[in-house]
Length: 340
Image 1 (cartoon, rainbow, N blue to C red):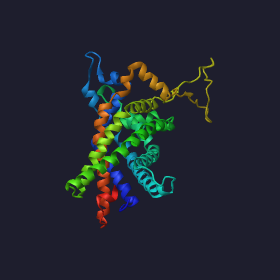
Image 2 (cartoon, one colour):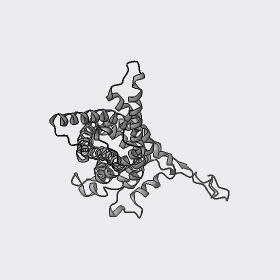
Image 3 (cartoon, rainbow, N blue to C red):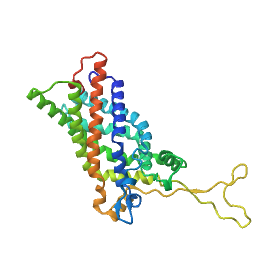
Image 4 (tube, one colour):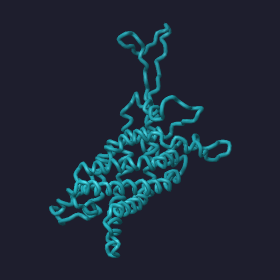
């Protein structure tokens, strides 16, 4: 982390997240809709049995606001934790019995700890985002409320349901980052070594950004395809969280026109609410296998690989370029090796 302050890391991570959210968010919306259990009902024309592309692509930025708000602090928290844990492990590895830790293990451990911190901040926004992405905004079903506000109303009686997908999000991101970051760091190092051997290394910001983007995108797409089944399960769990709005179920009358339900201090009836039962990950997994078979666990995998290649390439490319830029802007003579 030489040459960079914690502020540099926070700013670079936040700017990188903001850039990616704006540019590749529509691809994430398509992935969510492809993985949704309601895909056939909402986006397939029953008469012709073909995909209604107009409905599928409509409202591709629904829910983006909640993600931007949460992604900025969550990405900053991830990179601060990742860089801090990585530096700690590299510094104190000599005290271990064997004197050192392999770099892939350090990168995997640091990224995993970073993800656990980041997911705690990001989960509510991810739940809101994925439910907002599925809101039908056609003229026949239009509402004066935005998709995000319609989604928030689902959780007004049970706001804690916004964190229901934490284990699913962490369960997806932990293996993803554990695969991605060691691959990314190794690929980036190999590219720099090859360019140095060939005498083509320039040390410019553009070169740093491109090398990081190619390495991150390639490593991320591999990890994304491998973890697609976990991502499908995560999407279903988060969409199911939006079905947990309590159902009003007042008790029947006692025959005198008065309800047997509870009353408040002014004598007004209180509605009895019965939360809809939530389904666990095992139940949802069984449902996917029963309805769609093993192929259902890989829905959206190709799109997720493309989305991750573009998104992660931009994300880490902008992040590491931003770190070099901010350090140099303060007048420090920082090379790309200082942030590797």
